[in-house]
Length: 360
Ligand code: SF4
Figure 1 (cartoon, helix red, strand yellow):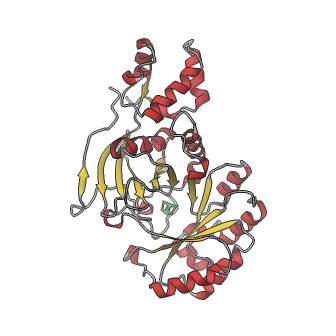
Figure 2 (tube, protein in one colour; figure 1 turned 180 degrees about the vertical axis):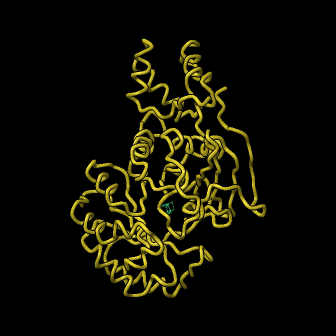
Figure 3 (cartoon, helix red, strand yellow; figure 1 turned 90 degrees about the vertical axis):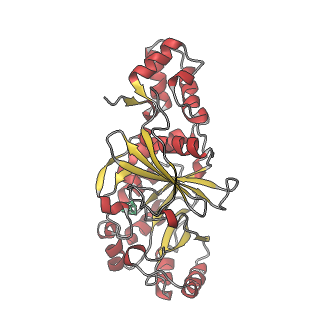
């Protein structure tokens, strides 16, 4: 029988539990320290807890929410992890090393759902369809396990893996808050990015609640009919409505919203840049340009010459523009390639192990 996951707890919930046992509230902080800072494999390692307390925790809770099925390492250093959930679903996470080493910026790209209902045409996750939301513990355990196996302490988190984070809003926000605890991962709110395909209601709630994390929106196109063809969300929540919402509600004092623009051969004409400028001219935004992976789902990647012209045209907007590299293409770990399936035989599997964290 599946026990409750202890990593679903917020600090207040942990305090409540310890209070019910007659334990002091500081036990909750100690617990979070063991779970996320020390990243223990078993309750028995929690040596400042009494034997009885450890036995009680072991009896009632699971320490791990996921088991590691496979790990693949790309030529550029990117690592992709395939996890199995307790009910036999598969999800993936990616460890990205911006400069290919363990020294530079280290980011873990995590999943928020099993599959996804949004149906973006360029995305492998979309082909699975939606299965279920991940629990908070399943979101956090991706970080615990990637850190444990890679031996790397990342300083960035992006919710850009499988799933639409705003369709699992409560669990995503709860997990992000726990990531920020100073007695755990202690990842700065400025280094946690939540990326949406453009759900108006979720973006509005996020702004109204004054959530402190970075917000990214997949833009990818500005012509409604063309955007709707690759991102069906456009039919219900148009990019025009989103631009209007950002202009109306997103404070200029906040970190800019990142607009992710995957460049294809057919979406980087001068008129495309002009439309982006017009739509977001009053928005507190920055733009990430990503070149489409070669041969991705039947779309043509653009040529470098056209990219340069498109970027030049956008620069007139006077907002930060970054050209982002795609990582881990050779192991299907790049944008739009996560599918939660086992790898093809040609892919190098560097590591395979049974559940990394057993609390037995
Ligand atoms: S790109 Fe994101 S929102 Fe779109 S289908 Fe894939 S996982 Fe879902």
